[in-house]
Image 1 (cartoon, helix red, strand yellow):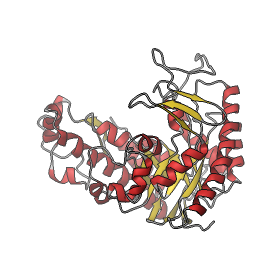
Image 2 (image 1 turned 90 degrees about the horizontal axis):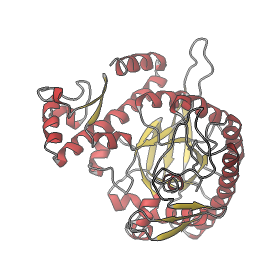
Image 3 (image 1 turned 45 degrees about the vertical axis):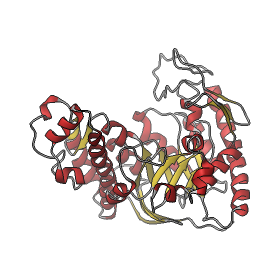
Image 4 (image 1 turned 180 degrees about the horizontal axis):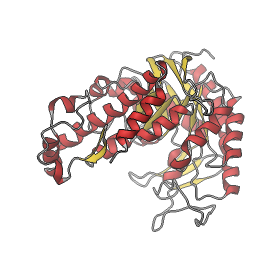
Length: 408
């Protein structure tokens, strides 16, 4: 099938004296709706909107692409309506590249009653049927797909690899992901192995259906398909998944699944040592400053995360001196921006005292201004990391930034 997505590596991270060979690189992903210069942070617009921020504002703050959620757009307004509108970008007035996830993460979050278990201890009891205490299971997985109950109205639905492909083709994102099962760290080793086999079988079905739909919809721009690497925190399973999917006809890869943040760099490195060098790698659900340095150093090219906008709505904002809650009383009379070094619209025009007032007054503008700042802060941080690789001072920049960010 004709490809309209290309990935070119233009720089590589130089090794640090005495350290293992780094996997970080600078590249360019070319899509039908423009280029993405990597490493790049991809803000999440779950329902075709980054909450509290205009798409035009996201463009102004430097976002190169937006990721939306296939599950949510399928339920509301319906993927067919997004297609009738001209696709995701036209629907939300976003001119650049777009991503959609497959809906596979909902297999985890719905299946365990919205309890997203990402860590475990040695004392944790593992099980093949993880469910949050006091919650109902809303999704049931079998080898063919997943049956789930809508969190909106309780109606029953079915996702299979083929349905996920159809939904994502209708949404029309430039980059989409194969349907996968995302397990929790509380699942047994035996279940992780079965799930990995299931995700591999689904990946083959996704490739087949993607090829069929691409031919059937040849009048539409090409949509790239990324496979998703699972395997929890088991090195052999992660490497096996990367090797198995790495030889399939994917345009790139997503690194997904439950993991302990303390092992993020190790797991990303396991995977990227096995994946093809010439294809882009997207790390799903990661966006905190510390994690970005770790992921980039170990070979991840793009990232998405809701954290920047989610914490903003609760008054938490990023600064070069660390994250703080601007609604706390000590900011009531601080007539200075969130971050003196930030170039965002919020910091150029508003003070911590004003944001404190907005949050205390429960004004809608509080979420807008805080989100604009947080998204710009993370987008700019990744821009700066990309630049530091090019100028060969990544390690100095990392030490300086994290030293200040962690100081408190």
